[in-house]
Length: 364
Image (cartoon, rainbow, N blue to C red):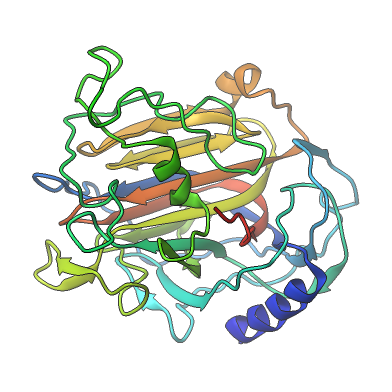
């Protein structure tokens, strides 16, 4: 039902030359674990319940036309919407069950749709995204395949995080701005590049999060976050392969002994209401960058073993330029760049005010 509605709205969006925005307050805190092992894999430690209930949440679908870094609250409920829509407690039909929650590959993204900002307003249509986030995944061929991308499944390795591969501010087109000095052939010495080269060039990096014909295949992806006790929502997949059976079908054996389609990126754009006291925790390996209010909040670039970062929003408020009672953008960028593992984890209690903005026409 949701996917049919998404397809219908996408058709409308294409004809209107606007990006698609899913909106609705969803009380969520953020932990993302994303790993893809190179020369070894990482384990997820700790136990997390698979059941529980969450508070009811509301949602609307907006066709966005403008952009802003912060949107002040308005309306009786804080975001001016109905907060009574129900969170789904069971994995919807058609989803791939993961360790906690699940995901579903959606339709291929059609070129020609106009890009737009992450804020602003527009017309609204009824719907219920509940605890499902909508994003984009792009499939690539690995460097070890004909016409493969040199940044994926390449002869690149790393022992820990390599910071500063991207700039501290999100780009005007809402993607990371390449700033790596750790390129193959001419990496800067430590401490700038403590683990050697991690990238190849700006032109190649820009293709990670831009639709590029013949280089990547972009698809919608829906992520179901399972409600947990205490208002937490969790998605965890120790074998996160959303483009299995699609894209370039450039498969390799994973650490589960099965053939999977490796070499892909994941991109999420959402917004949250900053109430005060929230935290955001990330754990994982391979590249992940998280921007809050267009400022880099989590920098886990490069190929590396599992690492963890926590952002306490109150302590980071000055750096991020945020104040309570205001809605801000959260943009997440992930890359699965090497066999043989791919793990992706989110635990969240941030109060999200939309369930994913798709900007499908960032073309290179």
